[in-house]
Image (cartoon, rainbow, N blue to C red):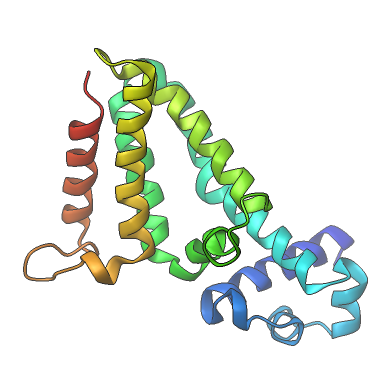
Length: 195
């Protein structure tokens, strides 16, 4: 196995450990066991648990948010509403399907009030880029009104994605049902992105 392949295996193992155990419970030993390597090799490649976790968080941040935004580049000009709905749907699905990874991205913000972490900066960059696309399809509003509508829409999704148990009333609305998620996304976009 090449150096790059070993490092990638370690990162993917760390991601699996975070999803299985939560970020606070992940240890170097758990990652080493999952990766099928010894602790000395783990330390050789990354030096610390913090370095591994940071690399894992950067990987999942890119996959879940940044790369997702880039996947819709062609649609933003031809069908911006559809691009937004698809992006939000895919992002929300990821939040519900990988709850511990999602919570890990917000860990430093929520637990330590740290907005300087790599995850916080990555999420801020994602939101700014997304707003750049969305504000172009919002008409009849000032820039600050557009930002307010945008933050309301994103906040709604984030809250439901981070704490679905608070919002998931099976008899009324089941967030884990595909049609309910699609309805939710379409409704949010209709309410907050007025074109």
